[in-house]
Length: 302
Length: 256
Ligand SMILES: Cc1cc2nc3c(=O)[nH]c(=O)nc-3n(C[C@H](O)[C@H](O)[C@H](O)COP(=O)(O)OP(=O)(O)OC[C@H]3O[C@@H](n4cnc5c(N)ncnc54)[C@H](O)[C@@H]3O)c2cc1C
Ligand SMILES: Cc1cc2nc3c(=O)[nH]c(=O)nc-3n(C[C@H](O)[C@H](O)[C@H](O)COP(=O)(O)O)c2cc1C
Ligand code: FES
Image (cartoon, rainbow over all chains, first blue to last red; front, side, top):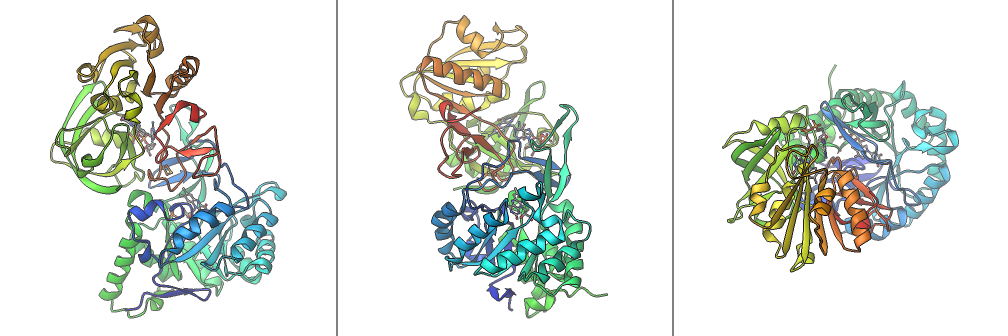
């Protein structure tokens, strides 16, 4: 049985990775999970300089999911490269660094520094960051802005680029096509859906930032739909995520057209989720006599 | 080592209005320390996040943990109906706990406010010191004061004056003319702010246990931060993670 999958020329030992921001840089969960068993570890978004992030409360529970507004707190690219990459390099897993920024120049600076680090296999570009020049509208919410940042970063990146799409758009395929046309090597989706929660007893917002990104099992049907539509619209490999809790959820994304999957909020519920899902995909392939994982990608019928 | 395990409820009883007292059997008791906490996961699938609860007491054999908690919402309501033999998923042991050695042979205040009282019990058991235990409640629905009386002198304050000093824990300290060289405290933010100011005036160290909404409980999500005076070693910004760098901080290190 062959669990290998390939994203933009990079072969992963299996299709299960961690969703950015839910797994730190792997260190915290390495007490629970053998990182050698993961297809890839995707790190928390990192910028050119340290970011303080938002005030607290930053997280809230909602029915079947959660909201977060961490505000992309991160230690800056230099600390990531000095501390976190050497830690991850000890493991037999691919390293994917998630990148954020407020201007195109911020992103370029990070992407160029990472170009000097051969241990980093792929870059995942978070375009849900506030674009300060565009009045804090995210780079990923306008097709032309997404096109521009993608083509700009392609000029500076040494590693293949995964553009991580925001679901907070009218037509996800329009965004996917813009990224493809600009030279993106892969797509990952979905990032969180913008939500809100109000505590009616205190008459206060549950999250200091008022709005927060929703994730967890409740968003899964939306994510599966978007992965399917995107797979129909572009040729790029897709990393699917959004509410994956078990192997069946992961396979749903794969049948919809994802070449790999990321596990996010469910790490918080079950720190062993990722390896249990690897095992579950194996069991599924055994049960249905699937020899190559790649035969499952986009294999939904009808 | 941190682990997620299935624990078995050994006993459960109600201590006061909305306040419950549960013993759970778990291997986590083996390495638990005062001021650390565990996360409990409700079974209700509409809930997602773990509920952080302080370790109140560890049994002599180190096979069970006691937690004392207030009903606040979905999760704690579910926990409160658990019966002997029921199981519950727990993640632990989390956080750094109180630096017990800093209080050794000193005059110490152990200050607990409301649902911040529980972690004071195991601390009082382990601390070798002259213990002055100051407890703040809303009303005369007291809890854990009897357990704590076995380990030191207990002073009570109630908001409505129905027991002990009328007012808060600081009022009780003043009214009883108490003094200390070190403070350990857990409770609501206004109380912790008052303790921080008091400790600064008296130039004594205060170790305070903080609370914040958590998602992972293990330092990965950056949900549970507190502002710090200096740049934090891990985050490289003025934020520390309460779940891993805390929940106990020296009051001077944090901006609350
Ligand atoms: C380190 C630490 C130790 C704690 N120790 C105790 C204890 O010993 N006894 C006790 O009664 N309570 C304690 N709390 C508070 C306890 O975590 C909350 O009361 C509990 O999570 C409420 O859950 P719920 O489902 O009943 O409420 P809901 O309102 O339904 O919870 C919704 C969400 O908000 C979170 N939440 C709600 N209130 C709080 C809060 N005050 N702090 C953190 N998260 C919250 C819940 O975990 C959950 O994710 C502690 C909190 C922390 C951070
Ligand atoms: C606490 C938290 C932090 C996140 N941080 C980032 C981030 O830094 N960069 C990013 O691209 N996505 C971030 N995400 C989004 C996730 O990577 C993922 O796209 C989303 O949560 C959907 O997956 P899930 O439902 O499995 O969590 C974050 C999500 C959560 C819950
Ligand atoms: S709860 Fe995730 S870092 Fe503390």
